[in-house]
Image (cartoon, rainbow, N blue to C red; front, side, top):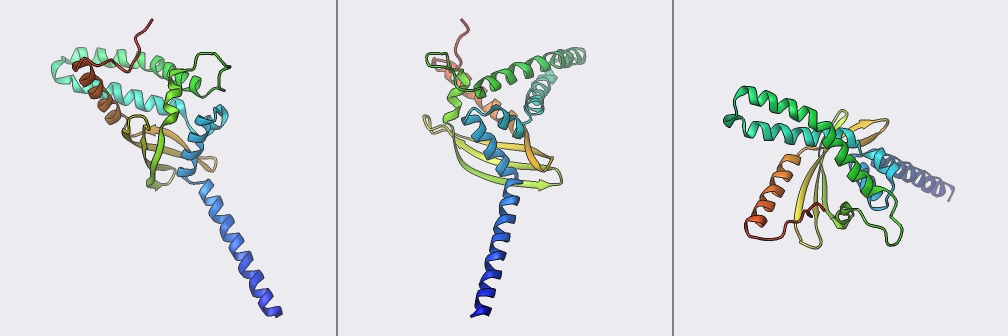
Length: 206
């Protein structure tokens, strides 16, 4: 009887240790950080969001990549001097674009406004649902995670490839690796809508 109790005690202890280790590993995983960032966004927890998302680096990567792609796309039709000029203008405008984009995102994360107050446009994106998440790679202090999200109103699915860096024992989102592909798809959809005489989803400035 005593041996049975001892064996059960050992098994339970090992199970608890294994469970604890699994939980610690889960909290230190890239997927955990992404889910925490999503929960922080939905619950208007700015401090938690900034813990798991490096907005400055992320926006610098996304906007810089888009500007660089736009310049390269028109390289054949532009003389070298104009290319250098365009790169200079892009370098000048990028910090302002990053700052404006960050302000919009932070505004959507701030605590919910009082009743009757105007709700930021970015609030609408919080209805997006996560359909699938998968770690693509994890090497050293870099990781790549694929997300498939959907808009419940339109049923449209969007593929996101997030880049994360590891610091202080947890992972932090700092890039959307396929951002150029996403932006190009949105541009195409907008051009198609305008070409068909449909109303643009982007509201006109007052």
